[in-house]
Length: 259
Image (cartoon, rainbow, N blue to C red; front, top):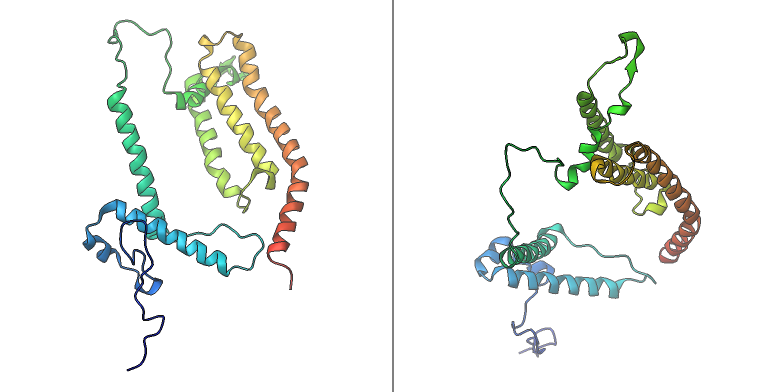
């Protein structure tokens, strides 16, 4: 009889998780989804397996790596990322249900249908769109038509919404770079800063009857502040870019020295 080798010995390493040995199988023995489902262990066990396997794979890859600084390691979307996202989603949904049960919103007096409210505003995330509907001063008067407007102010506001939404939708197709940080592409980052400020100023202008400021001045600031902030952001990021790219290239060649 051949003597048993070290590989044939049972795994007697003590575990501290109380779940027994062989929680995470090797790659060639990873159970399928059907096998996982037949276990009937539920989301907690599957979540534990995900984090334990992710930790072990990360540790193995880091030990095998020869880089001085190591990149962030990724894992497959199924089942690793999906299980993690389900766990996080379940946690936040539970928190929302808890807050809704313990802190119910106060219900005010019923609305009077015969009285028009003094302030009419949509939900806060649509203030910018509501502000575009109030751009009547930009609607040009044509002398050839006797000083009349080609389209009404309401139609002009709807067209302004179409233009703005269309511009936002086409930006991802124009910017196809691989940059992940604003400092890597100052131009597009400044465009984003200017657009964000423009949405904010439009939101403030939509509630101009609540703002203690002259409507004319508020209208001017709505279109003056976005380009100014975009120019400042571009100048700052452009100044930071040289030092950032130097450090990035130095790290890249340290990780992957040229052959």
